Length: 411
Image (cartoon, rainbow, N blue to C red; front, side):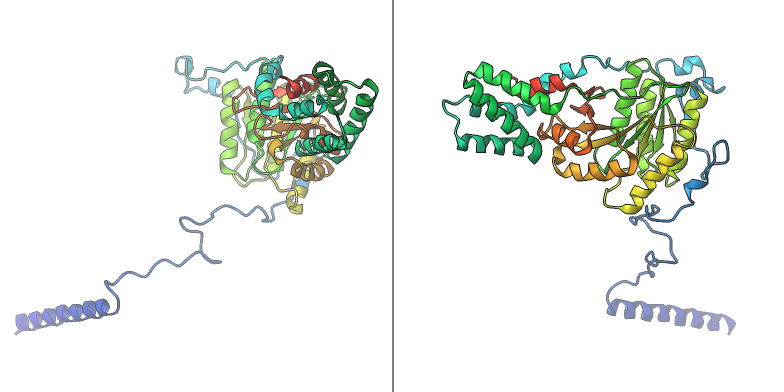
């Protein structure tokens, strides 16, 4: 009887399983296990969701940092080739051929080497003006076309009016349409606007027994991290020792990208935790540079929209925290030259927050119009000091006003 009872129970169980399965199929197909709850207030983000800390999240204030005292964030790791070479687990044989340092191209002559490339992309302005001013007669329609050409080159309204006024006077006095004389006249007047008298020295050398400190700022997507890396190569090419500060803690790849740039030329890189306090990283980078007696400390910062007040305030704090232990010698604003007049609005806000001392124009060899050089200098009253003319690691060049104007009107 016991065996029969057991068989009966098993049969009933099998029957119940079959009935449940049949009902499930009737209701819409095979039965599935209930899914995991979607992310919400009480759940961590799942796969495919944004797991990063929002940039507007309140963090501990950076104003509590004291010179020589504890930092607001854990001490970022300092990664450099010297530390790697001294590690007990790494032999000289292991390093041979693995950490070969690149030798950057010397700074002198970079813009001249790239002049042909610049001329190919920029001389539409010069050609257009020469064609107009070399005509048999120059009337009001001609001057209207000259004005249109200058404005379309992002020269700006005020500089355009000044240039036209001076050109009108010279054409009237000299009364010439000789292309050679017109070219020389145009060169001289454009050179006045670009202003070769401005001091374009990048202050990145030791001063008063401490490293020169350079802060690199700008909006998203202008190429700040790449520019920082190229700037390090420029410094190394001038026989300077460099520490890089990876203070862009919001973009996951930024510190790794900067580390790669540093490793190539033997520059140490100070990094912090992802999502950490950028001011703490900047503070440690300067402290490391001072302790190591290097020549230059270059701080890369996160891109931020000029319209975001909170983020601009954060950038101001980064600057103040650095100044607790060292003056900042250079604040370089990186602008994408292809944005034209839109970049001037960005420049204005950054200049108010961190006292910009120089401009780096990237992508000047692309679709940019040469007049932006004049416009941004007029807007901020500070010089364009460096220009990016390509994707190569040494395609960052000190700006030379005369070479630039010559490229604009080159045949």
